[in-house]
Picture: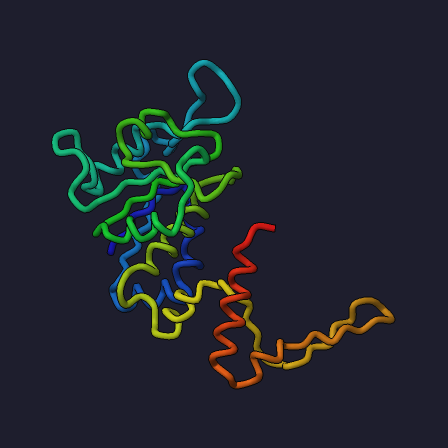
Length: 229
């Protein structure tokens, strides 16, 4: 699967995509992640991709021209054929639909996903209306730009691609953090205050070796976690 990321901060992605599962998936050629500097498609000598908003107001707005030129150059969209088959173009936006696990599974079915990293000041509305398929947010809060949301989406989508996760990672994925987990030491002494110590113990049932009881305990703990407080 191929990801194309359009951003004005391409350097932000090097560290994250060069580690862990994402790095291994690229080495196995299961993922092809291409990060593009949007300034490359600017129309002026200063490589400017934003401008003042019509009607006044604070901040700068991403221009439609560099984005349209980028999509055309990447053979994603042209004015004759529209969006190519099996390609999905996403704009990160605070007003967008909130990203879910269902969206990760849905987007993983495409051969290619293009993510345009928006800015908190805004993007020319013609981009949302005519150049992208959907706007996505990762939460009800404002970020400086769409770079972090792009990383979140790529990580989550990648995990849905067969072969990206190893066996152990797949087990962890199915577990999904639904029940409490513990590891060594069996007893951890916490210095709660200067004069107070707390002995934090692993639940006895997890040390019992009785897999039926453990499964029951985990199911009950998961239900308690899921119940509203």
